[in-house]
Image (cartoon, rainbow, N blue to C red; front, side, top):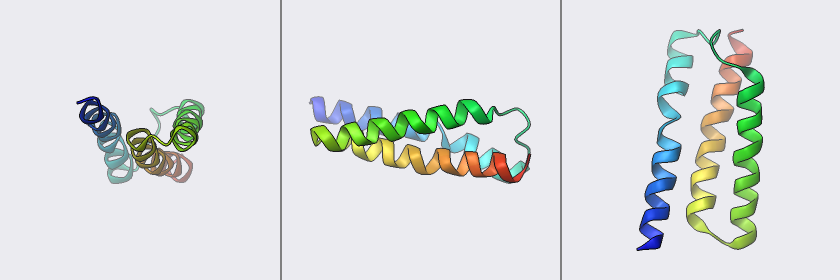
Amino acid sequence: MELYVGYLAAFMGTLCWLPQAWKDWASRDTSGLSLAANLMFLLTVSLWFVYGIMVNDWPIMIANICAILIVVSIVAAKLRYK
């Protein structure tokens, strides 16, 4: 049961960033985003990913690699559409 809760939390925690990434690229307006905050979040999910590897926890690894990819796209949009 715990594993299912972990996967659901991973899925929902990652899914919540997709609308922001989509909006950033579709509108090309990132003026309301903080680059510093997104870079700090990118570092956070990267560290969680490393932790997931260290403890061999697949929900943590999967969630955070997905989050890394999405947040990288948000940061890339911020840098491109300043």
